[in-house]
Image (tube, rainbow, N blue to C red; front, side, top):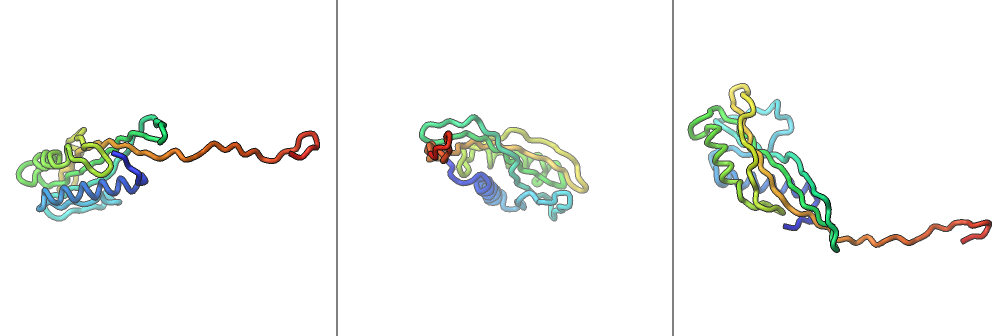
Length: 161
């Protein structure tokens, strides 16, 4: 896939697509962006899924008429739940999230791949689990910069050039 959007817009678009997909497949689960102040985040109900961008790794750029670079971006979905088992249990939700996101092709990327899932910590009144996905894509830009042969004026032995 070729992506001409700036990096920030691409990540935001992918997060929005992930949230929309999870909401459509899990309509009884609250799905939202990871909060800016997560230490103060409190959820109401049995569980919530929080989606966030983690990072991007880039390979060496290739130039063949265009500047092309493969990148692999990581996205994390946090499962906050009051129970480990049952319909809203962490283990069932991790599996459901993996099935919904794994293999799906989000904007400007190849198919999503689950890389790691598991327990993070027990918080007051909640269990926290996370699942990490990687999405690979390509960023290309036309090479339009021509060499600059312009030479500034200079003086050589009193002669103006």
